[in-house]
Image 1 (spheres, helix red, strand yellow):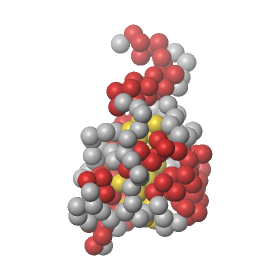
Image 2: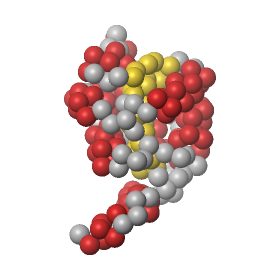
Image 3: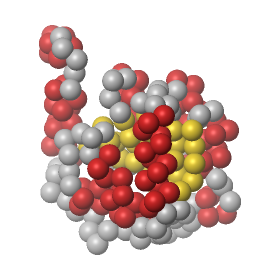
Length: 200
């Protein structure tokens, strides 16, 4: 399974969510499918997508938040799994694309998942209530749909080929992305909340 095909399979649902991505190939491929104001791409912040997504999910429980992560990024911040399990936001889905290499830095070496580490099992052992590993687009589409319907913290691992996009460039500066995303979250605020934000 290619990551871009996996993203395409769940894009209709993703487009209605708040999405935080890791750095590298995933944001470029998601952007190529169609940017949404609720998509936030974390450049130069390897390993932190799960932490940022957790913070948004806890502070905005009325919004469905999806973290699009990678095996290399998650392995840099495994502690985020135990923190997510501790707080268990029902509105957070952690989607991890596992290609078993550090693709975005040139496939220079494999990650621990290439030698047996199971990220879904690690998430389950950390206390994440819903976990699973998907190997086809249909499996991912079904698991993602089920996770949305279940309304509980989930970590879904999608096994993908180590193939990136033709180009990592897209026409959205990271500062523009940041301000657009912030404005979008404010527009989605509950009545009265937006005014309080402006008073701070």
